[in-house]
Image 1 (cartoon, rainbow, N blue to C red):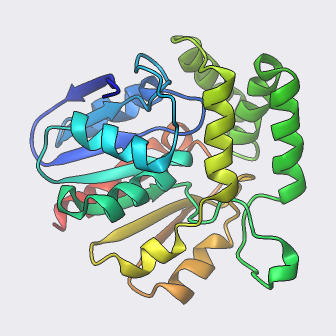
Image 2: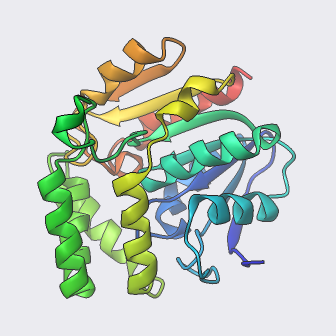
Length: 261
């Protein structure tokens, strides 16, 4: 079984924070400590990220199993950022007894749209932009990562400060190996979690940034149109890394979800 690294802060109702692609649980540092003033916060490194052991098969099934085998709380709110949103949706589908609510932070159940000939108009990251980045990663993944970090803060207030923080956090641990990075991109490219959303009977909250270049804000309209029970909040002048740029607003929204259950 893959051993995952976790950090636990605070006491009270349990919330699990799952980071995004190429990152590690250290990105939550300031946000998690603020959240831990009211709740028991578990920050966990995905397989092959941060201090967690790698796995041979970086699939949603294996990731979800490793996560629930590591987290000791019987039932938690699971918050996933970006790729982490895809992961927590899968956890909820496979292990519903361990999930009492979901928060999808800058997440999209279909991150990259299907080909246009299918007639699927779901909004997502532009296919050509995604494929260009994937090719850059293949050629030189060390050079591609700073480009990805820049995309995460683009358009947000104080983007330069946020970019510096992301770079500092990323440098705290070894960068995941190329195979893990490529597998993570494959999940974002192909995973379609919309059928999962249709079956969930737990509270689901989606928090988006109106300047996000990776998850377009128009997702915020498609979600309630297709899933009326989902709660959507859009933060103004926010990019992809909302927990850095809009910490207080995000804390208030998360606390609302936690206190309602």
